[in-house]
Amino acid sequence: MKHPKSNRKVGSEFKGLKWTARHPGAVLAPAGLVASGIELGWSATGGVIGGTTLGLCAWYRAHPDTFDHYAAPRMRAWRRRWSTYFGPRFNRALRACDLYVVDRRTDEIRFPRVVKVRSHSPSVDTVTMEIPPGMGRRAFEDRLEILADALRVERIALERVKPGRVALVIERHEPFTDTIPAPDMPDESGAVDPGDVYIGETEYGTEWRQSILGKHIFIAGATGSGKNSIPLSLLRGLAPLIRDGLVRLWICDPKQMEFRKLAGIAHRYADEEGTCAELIHDFIEDIRRVQRDFAATGQRKITMSRETPLNLLIIDEIGALMAYGDGSIARTIRKDLAVAVSQGRATGHATMALVQEPTKDTVPVRDLFPIRICLRVTTQSHVDMVLGEGARLRGALADEIPEGEETAGIGFVIRPRSRVPQRVRSAYVADREIDDMVAFIARGLAGSPALTVVA
Ligand SMILES: Nc1ncnc2c1ncn2[C@@H]1O[C@H](COP(=O)(O)OP(=O)(O)OP(=O)(O)O)[C@@H](O)[C@H]1O
Image (tube, rainbow, N blue to C red):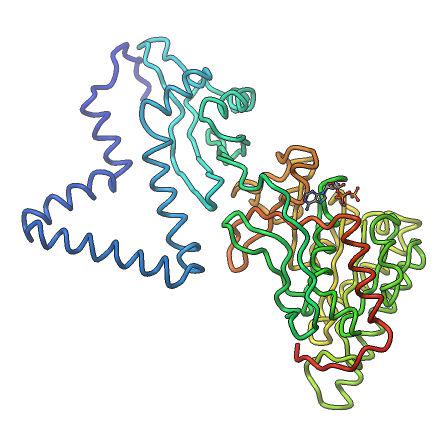
């Protein structure tokens, strides 16, 4: 039944009760501690707290992978929920940005209410807020910059969760302020593990490493975002294996830029759309050849040697190839890549495709690549196109990375075994270092001794 609205505000005791019902933990946890202190004694309660803290410290030290995955995001989100996105200071920031509405009858000020805080990574929080009636999403959109200044954070992006709810994706600070120097080139093949090659750093201060053993990697980034530095960093790490004929490069370079320098050390190199399609087709034929050898010898897995090397196909600007001609090349490439991705693992054939714009031409092939890297892109929608649905909401603000050399090589990958984006930066391989690498590889390519390393 409809009833007339009163001009009186809801009593503060009932507001308090409502708040308690919404945040039972905030009341139950301290109440539980006091009850335990009274019932079990303060020293026993202190012992339990101390034991829990010690257990967490031991977990933190002993198993960083599981701690960073399970415990750290929850602890960080809890801390930020109650220290940053709560109370008068947070409301003051909202007020300074005009992010509130005033009830015309009661003159009560209503702020957007924080419903959930997630802190998937140390540098990004996702704060879901319920917006009060009378306030639109546009109000947030228009004030994101001043809100970022008011909260003293790097930048804020907005995602719509559902009607009446928005999520602020808050990038607190930029973890990468310096260029990461080019990776060292090991002297000997024995010092390289192709299953674990250095590319750069992660926002956790750990090394960003990647396997090329039958892996398929898709790299998206606008022009100047630093895409090339990813394959080039990998190649420096793999240099002795390429020099010794244990890894073969197949390069499609329709743009004829940096990769042109690698033409002399590549097993195959093509720089026109038609010849690129042929090269990709021959790569598939190579997979089939190894499969036939497997069938003949009963082998099931490649052992890296000069006779059976690993193969790495790099396709620069796959978008250009997919959009070329009458579509027949795109169809062939798509079919061939589907074979490479589904069957290349056992035969030691890895692929790496680079693209400036993950548009609808490239979407069909993008889904074939299990590992995707998104550097700076020009549109919000590109982020989820590359990294998967909801990636931007979980903090992958790749469209918000400022354009410029100081941010080149910065991007996001989805952390293995989770859907959480991780900010990464690849090392920078300058022209001089590409030349050094090419000279190093070319010196030994012909006539180095046969070597066998198990992949
Ligand atoms: N990893 C990096 N770290 C720091 N600076 C980088 C990095 N990669 C590239 N740069 C700088 O950014 C500039 C642009 O990089 P680059 O041209 O390789 O980007 P790209 O994404 O490959 O562009 P395009 O698609 O146009 O080839 C480079 O000239 C270099 O100065």
